[in-house]
Amino acid sequence: MSGFGWLFLLNGESNESNGVFNLSNFWDTLMQAVKAASQEATKLSLAFSKPPLPTQEDGEKFAESIQKSVLALSTVYYWLPKSHGITLRRLVRDATAEVLDGIVQLVDVIVSSPLQSLSQEQLQSTGGVWSACDQFAHLPRDNRAAVLGVLASYIGVVKDAIEEMEQAQAESQDPFSDVLDDEDQDSRGNQDTYWSEEDRQLMAPCQGLMKASAACLRKLLSAVKANGNVSMPETVAQLDDLADISKEISPSVDDLVLSLYPPMDYSGVDQNACKLTLVLKKVLDIIRVSHVCLEADLNWVQFLNGALDHNLQKIKALIQGSS
Image 1: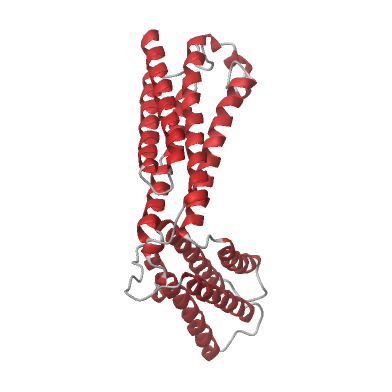
Image 2: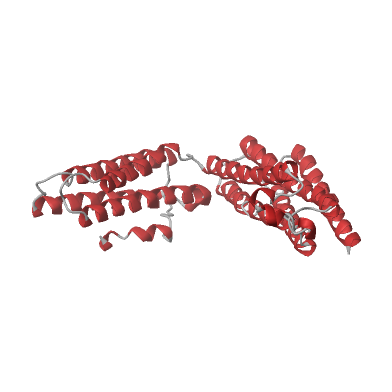
């Protein structure tokens, strides 16, 4: 199995050439290669599902067929040039690698299992290959759609973080009361498990930064949906830049949320609030000079910049006042 070379997908280069690349033809050919890989995996699984075992000659034919199918799928993936979008290419790469990993797992199960009847593990491995192949039908077909998909996922993560903090505030004065024993709850006077009034005052502008993060991502998604252009390499690359810089938002929001839980470390809150503000300002700067930002969009870019400054100044003033 080592001769199949599965891992080269992760670091390989795209097939950039001077020839004309047709994205529609690429997807047609890729889907045919995916279908062929799925069919070969099914044939292999069926052949080893019950006695008698295939002959050595038949086994070699199966090995050759499945090797050809995975090499064909890998080759087609490499046809997708980076100039058509790094974000899109990563999604296709990951989906391709998942198919190859699934086939490796299936072959390993067949080789290691005694042939008596079709095992549950072999059924699951075969289904895993089918599932990996099925996801190709749902992949975005160009870089604009790919970027929209990743932005939507970032919005979901940030939204979850905001709701988590709002729920913790609303449920109880003590966010850890549901996980403490009665004896532990008797010792909550040290403020290690609940927010003080000063803490709650500080949380308001911190939540303002989180909501600005969500608003920034929503506005960016709308701008990409309305104005995203994949007709030129320059605009495709700008979409990739927007996706890459936006990826930093949700981890920064998570860090700020974690620092807000009691006992609240004000220096940690200050550090994480500054980091989140810096990330958001970088995102807004890249949005401002990109093709997705029209003149009308400058208003919300400017508004969000002002909201960031306002909330960060309030955070610093409250922290300074408490020291």
